[in-house]
Length: 281
Image (cartoon, helix red, strand yellow):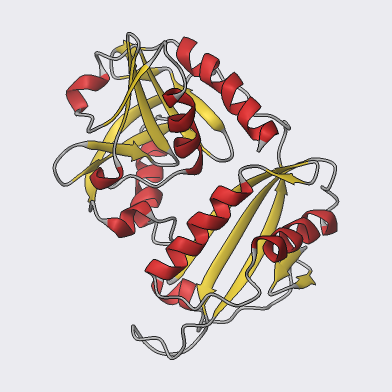
């Protein structure tokens, strides 16, 4: 079942057409959200990011788009799919309504909520082999739009195909200044000794929810030095650890980049603290 504008519909129901602006122009935003036993992880952060992104794209925010209303709509979809007492992945998509060419006829929006099952109720550390490479066919343009979670993800699609064709589990994206920005599906953190770095938003990375949570966690820990700053490709092979963060997986350690192999001690330490933050949220 999917929730389309408050109506629960079978997944094979035809409720969109060829005029959909998300399809035509990528005129849409989405949030990937973890829900466990009816609790939405980091819901306030997801909600505020969505509202801020809608304002940046000049979408009209409906009066009923309160935190409480959207939470009800998410949980209604979870319940309709029999996952209210299970871990679930939610994709919440907002798109501008049909009409117009590049210039829309309206700024009013519609939304779709989809639910799929997750294996674990908590973020877990996957230690399977996870090799990455730089993706250099196309570059991220570092501006405010690149920090938003829009449906314009062609570089991520082409990069994923490149990774699959070459036997990598993921790729790291570069901006036009050849700085490392992020992974195809999440933010990047680099560990060297007790110093942890992640690219800043001005470098073009996604304004990730778990990125934000980890920055707050690291700010409260004395044993690590943390810095939001650029990461050069040359630093990658000198690092002790590299890991990727997103709202579904939490923290995903990278095990290999070119000839360098990494451990995941800091990632494991931070994962426990991230799970604690999710339970308290």
